Image 1 (tube, rainbow, N blue to C red):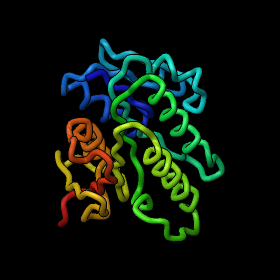
Image 2 (spheres, rainbow, N blue to C red):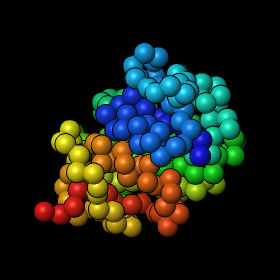
Image 3 (cartoon, rainbow, N blue to C red):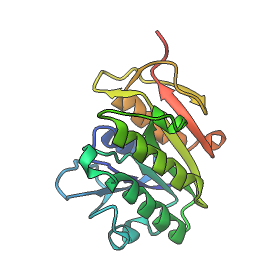
Length: 199
């Protein structure tokens, strides 16, 4: 299918792009700035502000699925992340995109109070959850614990509507799960907890 990846130049996004290419998908990438992404021949690259519909509408046109691995880099940037997700979802609905996969952390599973340095991220992931749930798109949320720079294992554990069994997952394995989600119809309409297998 034709897939558009948001956050394609990030730690996980680079792996999403690579695995999608390996699977034979036609890949488009949306990044903040040109030049930050090394990509294979044939990959279309669009740049701009993901919160701006005028920037992302051309990238969304004609795609069958969206994968967003955007994240909130700094707490003071709230609500930039959820604003971008809202814009992406709206663009996908206008363009008739069938499927969207977005990433989150485990705070997406509940609305328990979160304090401290990660409170903003929790709020943003929950806003994104509510946005995709209210949309007309076929959605999957992949919720991970600590995403690390460890060497990949080549696999992961996935649990419907519950946290994955371990406390970490290497970025390449998380990227693999994102691409697998494009082919898992049984994951549609679910928050899927993914992590490394339990040790």
